[in-house]
Image 1 (cartoon, rainbow, N blue to C red):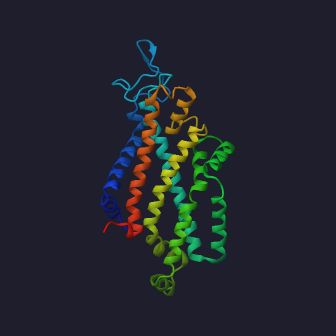
Image 2 (image 1 turned 45 degrees about the horizontal axis):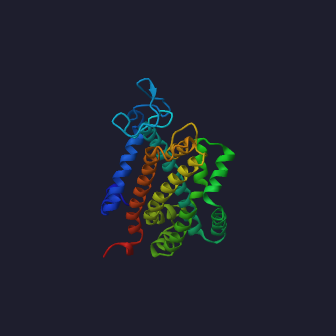
Image 3 (image 1 turned 90 degrees about the horizontal axis):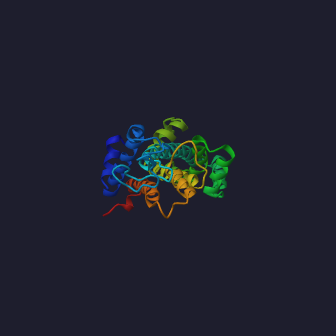
Length: 285
């Protein structure tokens, strides 16, 4: 199994993945220190010369501008970073754990176990992604934990099928036969011998799952199904739409949109490095 230094080398071997890695580190840093970086509360009304600082464009006083109610968009953006990172990270990692275990078990045992698990996966494939999540959020509530649960319940399906296919290929190799001959248990073979060989694929799809989780949360929040008690990038865009100032306050639209694009693109760049490890034919000759 690769150590931290090996993963660092894989990421830094590719220029785009290196750029994406440091952008992700930047967002993580902002997420951790968000309460200390944000100069104001997300819904703190600001005043200038006794008047509400409504729709102020970016300036030294307001680096990202203000909303129609005088809220500081820079503070909202910083605090929303923490929400987005939590939703993306937790949803992406839990979903890859579910997908990996289902794929490993189905691919290793085959037979009826494989049939049951894959038919269940096929059922989820037949459900439309965003509408399914919106329905779940509408049923359970708009709390942050329910948003994460809704995303996790469906986003694992692709990683499960890919890991299953890779596991079927690996289980036929000689070192697996040798492990069985030595009396190794099934769990030891799956998690000690097969899992390290599918790890690049796991990390690849972990990046994809995190990216899709971020996009899904932003989409659901923009449609009004996000957690109303926390600020998120999609929620900022939703508030802009409700205000009717989309054509006026370009900075209000630009700030969260750029952050979403930057973070998702960075995750794709990092996943590209692991895609080359999982499929060496993609490497430049």
